[in-house]
Length: 82
Image (cartoon, rainbow, N blue to C red; front, side, top):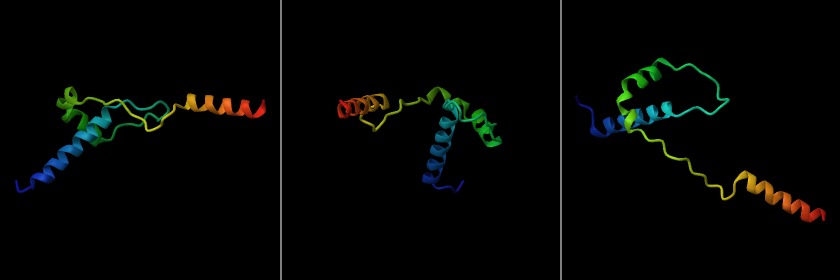
């Protein structure tokens, strides 16, 4: 095989990323779309990776939660009224 190492490495990384995205649960309301033949192949062929795929907790760049920001807005509007 005359494939450069970097190309193989990039392809392996891409396949692993696609596989891990397939394993993530879909958000509610996103629709129940059928898997493509490539996605089915990937789930079947890369199943051996499942034990090694760890979903990271999501992080936010927001400093306040929506609930907190609504509470601050409410305090400001009450202060303006009263």
